Amino acid sequence: MEDDIDIAVDKWYELFNQVINKHAPMKTKRVKTFKQAKWFNEEIKNSIQYRNMYHSKKDWVNFKKWRNKTTSLIFNAKKEYYQNAITSSKNSKELWNHIKELNPKEDNIFPPKMQYENQTVYNNQDIVNTLNVHFSSVAEKLIGNNTSDMDFSMLQNFTSEKLKKTENFHLKLISVGEVCSQLKHLNINKSAGLDGIGPKFLKLSAEIISPSLTFLINKSITSNRFPQKLKLARVTAIHKGGPRDIPSNYRPISILNTISKIFERHVCTQLYEFLNNNKLLHIAQSGFRQGHSCQTALTKLIDEWLKYLDNGEIVGTVFLDFSKAFDLLTMPYF
Image (cartoon, rainbow, N blue to C red; front, side, top):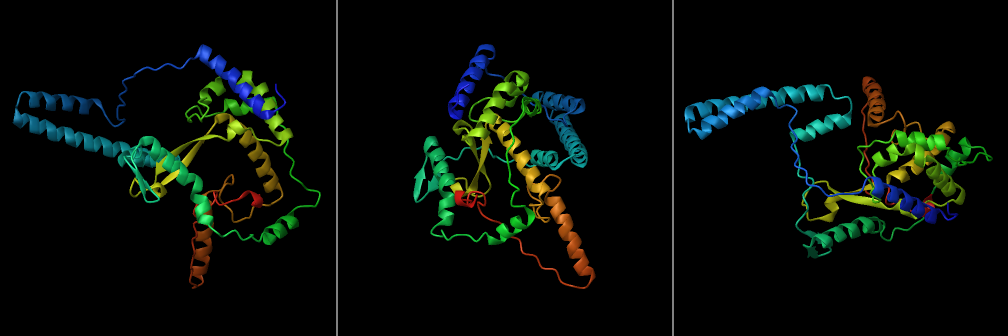
């Protein structure tokens, strides 16, 4: 393997893709797919056949009878299926998937035009470029001329009270076993990143590629450099609402290369452990913490509110939402 991390990563991709192209070459094939609704049953199928038969015979009396029966069967089947599905949903993701099925939105419609800075573009490539310019410059526009230094004295005081002067965070190297375990636990239903390598290929070849990936991760750690290739992401513009020809009505979703997730998970695990062990995470923080969520935050807030209300006091709350919060973080603050 090369000493330079970027050259080493490029070489790894070259060798891996050679093997993939040899044993599983990409081929284009048209496949006619038909996804049957889960609420559809044999009774509805038979009713549709009778309805269509009487329609073709122009027997309008029986046609109306079976049309109404078919409509009723479909309505009741949908009602029963979604009531059971929503009631038995094990998590919020599963619940919202069912709700989206009931109220489908046209999220994947490509806008016919895009308006930006008093100009309107119609070409597909120009529309994509316009969204790219908007996403990459929106933070700078929000910051504007506000370049004043932020006061981090309170944060520094908080951390200095928790940490000893000799207590520093040191990123440990990763083992072949840890890399192999992470590869074997990849979700094969996740999308591939810009490199086109899906998690299924990596999972199937986990034991073979673990040593080489371990070398790359450890090389990145010891050289204090994250590979340039793994910084690239496939960005999808998701429509939030409102007119589809306004860039600000879209939010970017970055699909990272699966390999970079192995890198990042290793760093995240150690960093979270360090923060948690040294009690550097505020007790009121619920975001980005294991075992915490919006539900835990709401439970604590409601409990506090009820205590005040029981004592006859008035409760007032202020909710803040930071626009482009992560994009507004600049390098000097890290």
